[in-house]
Image 1 (cartoon, rainbow, N blue to C red):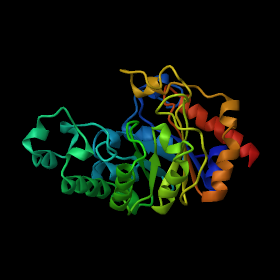
Image 2: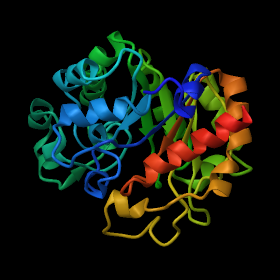
Image 3: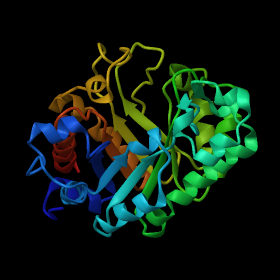
Image 4: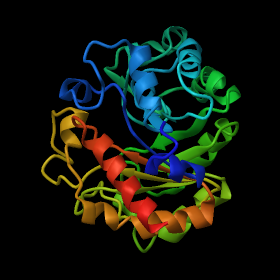
Amino acid sequence: MSGGSAVARLARQGVFLGTCSWTDPTLIEAGTFYPHRQMTAAERLAHYAAQFPLVEVDATYYAPPAARTAGLWVERTPADFTFDVKAFRLLTQHPTPLRSLWKDIAAALPEELKARKNLYARDLPRELLAEGFDRFVSALLPLHSAGKLGVVLFQLPPYVAPSRGAYGYLAWAAERLSEYRVAVEFRQERWMDEAHRGSTLALLEEHGLTYVCVDAPQGFRSSVPPVAAATASLAEVRFHGRNTETWEAPGIGAAERFRYDYTSPELGEWVPRVRALAEQAGRVHVLMNNCYADYGVRSARLLADLLDQAW
């Protein structure tokens, strides 16, 4: 990473910018970020890490990570590079195909659960779910030991609303992941409405969890307002774009869902918010999830320039 770039200068001040993927096929096909389309996985990661100090790993949502893979990430990146890692979908109460589970855990399930297309955290015996958390933690130890693990992103689905059960599960999950920093992103509007905002932020602060601030389309049940709040020593902002037509559209891929090219005025709205977060938390992760083609890369660089000018 060029030490004289806006991205590098911000990192030295505790504001780390990056994207939510470095392997998206549309980014590779765009041909505007990577020098060559035919690059190895190691070459792509090395090139990305020369441009940004932070990336989010999305693959760990779809399948549990392996310690060997985490070790390769450590080897292929500079000493000061950081990975935020998305929690496995079973742990965050998303529907999970049986084939995605650890084989021995799947084999230990009751027969009636093995016949289901998808499983949820609530379906598993608590001891098996706890084992899943422990294995997820263990797989990330190479990153953690190398000082390269930023946060575990714990993204709740839109059907999980504030309730006694949801509060209890978050508290339990925080305990299971207590070795690591955990950031929580909500996809249900009630968590941050007037009736629940105070209790939501208080719960996160009580358990040392980072509130994930979001920029996303508004007007949906899954919409969370663009509130900037710091509940831990690390703050986080994720940019999902503002494409209302694709936000809840069925049957489309992630790149198409978040296909949005931010303008300078739109990103400029977040300059004072990010500065405030930096003052409150000391460290801020800013991630672009508009990962269609090179939109996320360009948005990250544009916001870096805006922040650098205003710092």
